[in-house]
Amino acid sequence: MDDAEAHILASLGRVRLCDLAAADGLPSDGYKMCVSALTQSLAQYSAAVIELPPADGALLRSGLDSARLFFHQRGYGSGEDALGSDDSREWCKTSGYYADPQMWLEMYDYRPGITAMEPTGAAELPPSGLPDIFSVLGKVSRDVLYAISFSLNLRSCTFTELLDNIPLRSQEVSSSVLSACCHSRPSFEGVQQHSVASQDDEQLLMFSDQEHQIDKTLLTLVKSDRSGLYIKDLQGGWILVDGNLGPHDVVVYPGLALYRETAGYVNPAVHKTEVGNLQECMFGRCSLVFKLMPRSVARLSGSEMRAAGHGVDAQFQIPILVNDFMQTEHSANQLFPNNKEPSPHAEQEASYNFVMKRKKEGRKTKPLPPSKRLRLEAQRVLKERVQDIAGKKGVKLRFCSLRECESHIKSLDRPCENIRIEIGWPPGVPFVHPHDLPNKAKVRFLEAYEPGWTASQQDFESRSL
Image (cartoon, rainbow, N blue to C red; front, side):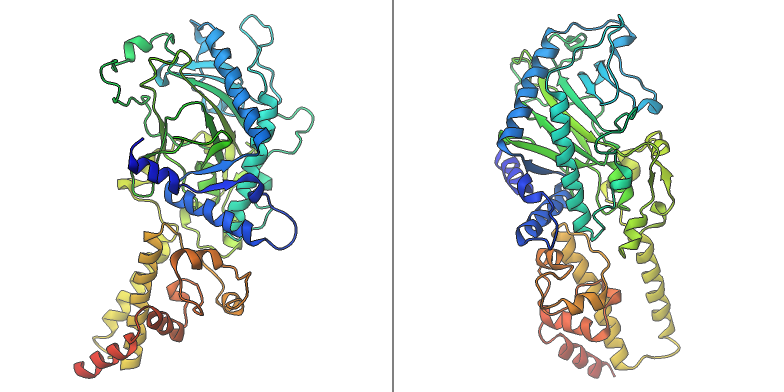
């Protein structure tokens, strides 16, 4: 790992699960700081690191050991039984062993409610410990989901309708799934034909054929025995997110379903997996992957985001059934054209630009008084400065109630404290979108960042008259 990768890994949000667990009553300062670190890392790198308690970390390491032995002793199927189904309608029914030669991948899916069967009709023996690991990672993913809802000022029960019952009811099948995975096992059939790396070129990185993958999950948690997971960051560069992790650490990243339900405020991770440089490892690269999935009968609508006062783009306002959503193709190019992230406020930006253009055109026939021109200029400059500050720090702005913010300026539990701290907002200035600020607050903001701004503008006005 080079210095740049080490720096990025150190910058990833790293939080302890015990600090992330929500409790009744007012949130503690520690919880606020933990949520802030988590959400800022998701915004900047589309990933974060969660440190589990020692007992849970030991359980996951034991599960990885069991997975290695499971795949090592297993022979390869030669027919369709060993291949995964390409039918998107089967997304919530996968269970048992299958292999994907194009991805150089073998998997065993554990899905509560379904008993995996061998081709002979006998029950398939899975790697040990999967039910306990499923329970642990399920709780971790829900704690992360509650933290995200807290950061977006949503109700704590916002995602409850999307998730499975706890515990599952009679005859129910889990929507979420835990996969024991093995990449590039040396004896894997067909690998020798695909491999182009040699022992003389140990630095050559090889990736699976599908380099731009986006999970259709709410959240994905990954624990691997070897590094190799790359995720695209805010600037469009690939970063290694699982290098030199601690024994109790897991990587978490958001998926497409969470992106849809939060109306684009939480971007999905675009990721790829390194499959080369494993010639000397007889077991390949093993990992445990937990995917928190929404129920197939639920709907993704973004209604909770609107209820919380967030701006919701038109593309997210049409509810869609989860089962239909899972059968719809989504590509990275569609979501991020030209490597640019979608803006949930695109429609409002266009409306704002149109209004400002009309106002500028109107000046030709009816000149505005100097005080009005000053306020309009303050609005324009303020908008640019706020967006520039937030953009450099990877912080997404959100709508807030001006009255609510003003009434909490001097209190410790003001709604926007985390974002105010992240972008260095001046003390005493309400945090809202620029076009929601009253005129005096606009000037106050600019004076806080550029003392003497008002006087310079007035001087400019007097010289231009």
